[in-house]
Image (cartoon, rainbow, N blue to C red):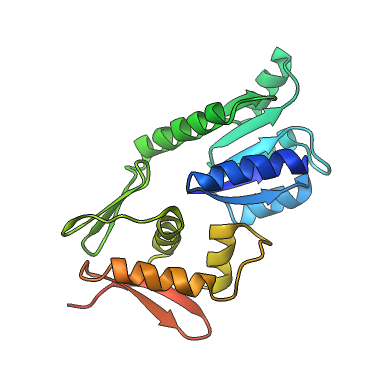
Length: 223
């Protein structure tokens, strides 16, 4: 699952991002409201966590603009304000949930899971390709021989490739999804993850093909 975090307090944002990544989520962090709106409008995400007080557009303006353009991304709003009117304004703008700082990470992750389940009520949360079944809500993968144990990064890689099933995904796009935009990763990090995932998907009717100079493609293995 890819989470977009919009928070201008760097230390708080890094703490949230690191905690979420430790639980297997891919996190993109943005600190400016205008930049965040452009990113969410063009790139989207599975869930957005947006602070109200931001440079550029504030969080309320971002949410209103996204809903006006038809975006259905689930949104959790963050703020240091505890006044009821602020919570009402955020929810009326189109936010799905609201969390007042300071908060416990356990509460934030519980709300993320709740939004994921709510979304899964609309989208089954079960995705299939070849002979594998990926439960996005439970974060489990089942193959023809039973469960396939995937560490969090390999699971995020599989999800990224499934999001673009049948299409080529660039190495840069994969790195941004797995490690966050602007993250410094070793040049062969994505290649190593691709290699490990390929081995684990052997004999499942699924292949990861390399399009040299372009990226990678997840597809059914021809019979």
